[in-house]
Length: 481
Ligand code: SF4
Image (cartoon, rainbow, N blue to C red; front, top):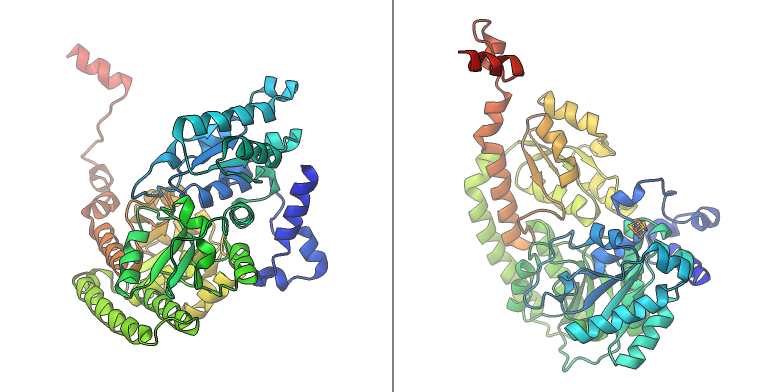
């Protein structure tokens, strides 16, 4: 098992579709993509976490984590991936491997029993089995167990070789892509196909974002054969090999899958984004153009242009009331992946100014793209929390856009903060999503609470006012009175 994992890791580090990897020397490539893991790195997402993020949005299958229960507990449903039907994906099943199982060598038996039990209880179309660090270290052969369980039960069991120590979260995304390519895609033929079938890769239906994209495709007669993996059904994924075009949404997260699908089934792919008005229009145009090249009706491009014109006009009309509030407002953006560049262009589109953006988790391609679209490319880099705080506290920025972990920097500086990462509560994709983002930005910026808390306290202005003392002395004073 150790050997399998090692060779799989080496293969993924050599991804030919990854421009960053190709730019490296042979020696650098051997070292791999990840920086060496340091203790506690798993808190920022280990490879298992990354694989789980990429596959958990498949809503009708059982996701079974083989390992100690804490692995499952840490990764369960941490992205708010929404479903339009089944909720089997939210069960959070684990083999809960204990020390005794490890000492007694019971891991594989325990896994087999857990798979059988899950199938008997929930009758899913498939079971995804995730390997974590402990079973990988003791040598549990989850591929063999899955093969055996699938033969016995007749239900596909998909091994995901995602030992946490093999790399970071991004690497885990690729391991998820490998599992889909090797065991799922191409195993079932779709009931029918059309010349406008497409897949979207790396879209996880966070807070229901695919429902902001799908209606646009439907208006154009483009069928979303498989969304990989937001709100996905197992059957759709298994038949995804019949799509005419693949669109890669989340940067290079599933690039290995896109590249291999092109090699095996001849499906061309492109990287696009549905964040921001201009990027949404560009993605629709590229989809239409590539579909026509692959046999879709010629009038698709014309219809796409008509839809873009109508949707853009509608979106700008809805954004208009917020324009004055947002115009010239200075933003610090702290995010990664495809969002890093598409949100930059979306914010600039609506007249905001990016004063700093952290690209710590972005790929080289993402970074280059941001530099191209930023007014001042020097503002692109890694922004430590203390610098972000200083900018906000010294009134050099008006708002912080980041994930939940960084919110305290904004709150400590008493400046508005908006969540744009996976824990967000609003969907920001497509034209409607951009309008929602603008509305949320305007709400945060005009919320009177910020001005209130930035104002000096009364006792800071006048020496005659003393702050209320809620300490023990005061309490005893009240008692005596
Ligand atoms: S898979 Fe490994 S690194 Fe990841 S949470 Fe489990 S024990 Fe930690």
